[in-house]
Length: 333
Ligand code: AMP
Ligand code: AMP
Image (tube, rainbow, N blue to C red; front, side):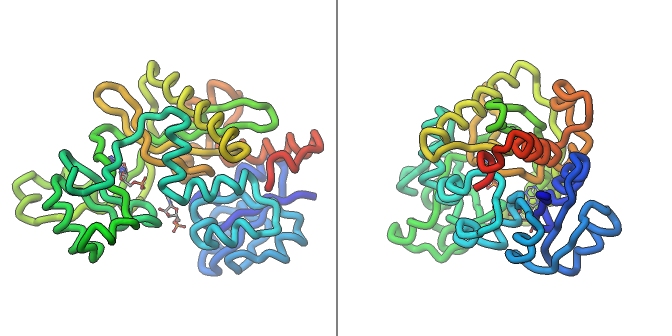
């Protein structure tokens, strides 16, 4: 009997609740300190294993692991690639996603609007956001407005002194717009793309800056940080939905050509400009925690399902359909 397992953080409550709603037994694994969160305060885990990745126990329990940002961050891409427990999704995507150059190639192939990338900081002619490779969740990012500003901050924050040291950062045009993170689900069993929900992140301290008058901001000399604290649901202007869906379809198609497919949940992270263009700066090829406000479903899932359908539950349903059709190997790697 297949059980659904995930690492105890990020969106595990949603994933395990969704799995139980679809009739699966569930397994959470992770730090002992959070055990009661998943077994007592929110009783969604039938088993709790106190380990970062208890491979033998997971194999014994016939588990399918649902990857999350936390799972991949704690285990590391190399170990995830080698794991023996079935993994929901296409592991080949991990390399494409973790290398900013490959990721860009993928998104370009999908014909998405991307921020301009500056190879030479001395070309900076407008606001930029500087992203060190491997920086997660916006930690270590900084903004700059011209080459002098860039070199001063690159030295102060990253110890970068000359162009030799630039291999490990990407300098992106800072696109001014409203952050919008659509959550998709591509069903490999049905060959269909669904829009599950949309969020924006609530980040400290960037979302607090606007509460301080501009004069004080200048006096306090605040450096911006993007630490995710929570997520806020968004319902999009209806005429923009078709753009978002077409962007998702092209992303799946490009993945089929480049890496044998992208299935299950994924998210395009971007902003809508005043010209109503969706500029995408990142892809997350798995469930994002921005789906958590929608444990009981979203306005979009309610249009399609006459029952509460979270992304977590949709994953479990996909696995259930795959098992019923005897094609589980189609959705795990
Ligand atoms: P955690 O397990 O909370 O330490 O998170 C692991 C990774 O997932 C980090 O890169 C976080 O930035 C990301 N993450 C966790 N929770 C959220 C959230 N609510 N929204 C967006 N990203 C998140
Ligand atoms: P992320 O790396 O996706 O977690 O991004 C961290 C924060 O930086 C988020 O608030 C994004 O909205 C913002 N951000 C990232 N790239 C850009 C960009 N090119 N233009 C504007 N904002 C960005």
